[in-house]
Length: 132
Image (tube, rainbow, N blue to C red; front, side, top):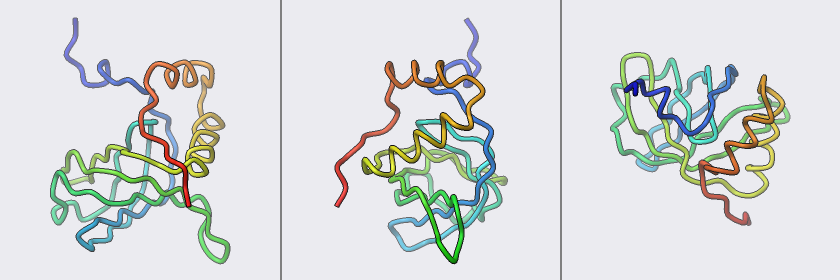
């Protein structure tokens, strides 16, 4: 048995480059890029990760469309690791509308949507709640 972290993942990562903004509960705001994403988390590149503490919580805004008609997916999250290139972020929860949009984004960009959906049956990845 191998001890490769990729082999322990419950969710397939999808290559997808999007702008994102991490808004921490302590008031810090960090803009960066997502290069790949899964139903349980993401690594956000090009942020000043030296100013982010592991364990920090907040909201990750995945920017699907910028101004003048912004469209974002907002996911409650926790920072689980940092290094010089960015921050590893674990998803905690999302509202039902955001989840539907997130799920569609993931399936549309997956090379194997059936496998992705099968993984969701076994491990949902994040909690879903009824929004406002």
